[in-house]
Length: 274
Ligand SMILES: C[S@@+](CC[C@H](N)C(=O)[O-])C[C@H]1O[C@@H](n2cnc3c(N)ncnc32)[C@H](O)[C@@H]1O
Image 1 (tube, protein in one colour):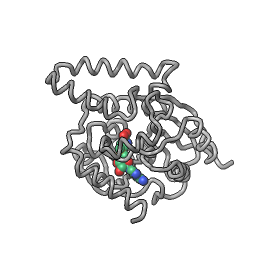
Image 2: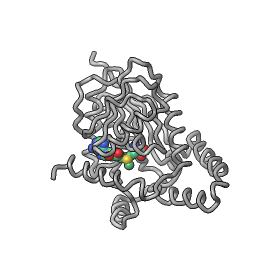
Image 3: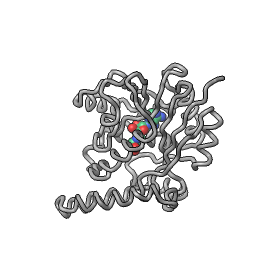
Image 4: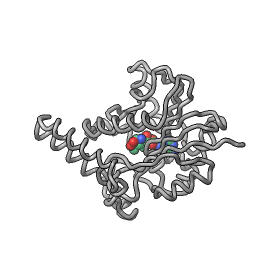
């Protein structure tokens, strides 16, 4: 089986089992949505003529964490891609329910995009590239994103933060997955300096970087804790949990943000050919 087929099979299986397994984390999802909308609003101004690419559709398919439908005007030209057909189909139907245009949703591999060179003005890649088993695949995907971006176009990218104090060596992550403690493949990631170098090499200038969503990696324990507290308190603790999460988000303004952030986030702009 080829690599894209293996990936599609894995993620298709995850999609089929997702809603039954009770993974929904409404409050974490709400916080994630707000954080991404804030990041996109701070780092870019979306205009109706822009062509936008989003590099996976998991959140749009399973709706709790989605931010695309809220951050992007309904009639924008959005190309949403995902390697799993099931996820593309579910995201399409969620988009249509919200009156969004899902005509540009495609099933394909982010490492081999069926898009022309320099055809996309804005790419939003939220923790897609940290689901590959090798760093080489992350670099391949970054090159592909650089290829399709117009000169002057913007990439907003988040990936797992290797500097997070709880980020374990990869063999522990592998063990974690083997024990069935993660519902899907957790991949490799790049440190912020390595990411900046890789982007510079493909002609993308990093204009902004930060760390977002301040909790441990892997986040299984945080997700379990949120669900348990909500279940045991029958929702009575929801506001307290919201406040706690908002407090944690304030760490983005602190000096230790790269020690606590779950993801690093960067804004990079493609240099013109001249
Ligand atoms: C765990 S989800 C990430 C969800 C979300 N972006 C987030 O913030 O956590 C990973 C998503 O990436 C997609 N994906 C994995 N490999 C891919 C590839 N090579 N090309 C496109 N999408 C891919 C999966 O199908 C899945 O929808």
